[in-house]
Length: 321
Image (cartoon, rainbow, N blue to C red; front, side, top):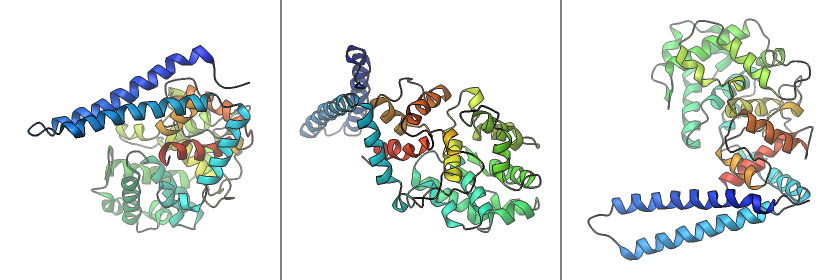
């Protein structure tokens, strides 16, 4: 059976046309506004021609993807997984931050902070996460467990978009509290898994509860998402992939071996979501937890033991192609 659903796909196809045209026209309008004193008609015509070409290309790609069989889709995802899941991927990705360290707990802490601020331009994410590590003397575990309130002054001035120095200070305090009770952050997530769980929903919610069990500013709570409230929890799912997936391709770490890769979820964002929908793996239009569960079911049909590996394929096709 093919993924193409006939007339049922007319509406999403028209929606794709509409979004692409509006996006391109917006760019064109912006360009025109900047050139009101001396308009270049030739350049404007070329821009409009590009709009048509891009819409046509998007539509053709959409139709081609939607006519693939399930076996063809699996083969495509496998091919792209092997293409993107390799050490070359690391340098330009936030996962490069925990790869700076060798100690398990340094990796856990640096990974959590890098994943937490992983929204926006990737070079900026890497730059700011590097700054956070430098402010901790590039010894995040020692800094977390041995810091005094006076030591936290080194974090003053840190900012990444809406994540500021006060948020980072809470992360340090919360992590110190956790390490005083658990040997690893894995223990917190493991404790939150319930019998019969097919994903990390309860585990992530439990981690957030423990993380904010000490005094904190309410504003900081937004930086740790909660799937029980409908969030897709993209960044925390990405962090879990880093920590749990095996290091067979030298990208993820495989540090935590008490949590099965079979219950990990794809870090759903605009790139992976768009490609998943084009492939017919996801119908829900919102990128929320219900969409995560729908995508989980599709990916587990291809690999029930390690479905999240296809994140490399879906994300890579969105960013690099």
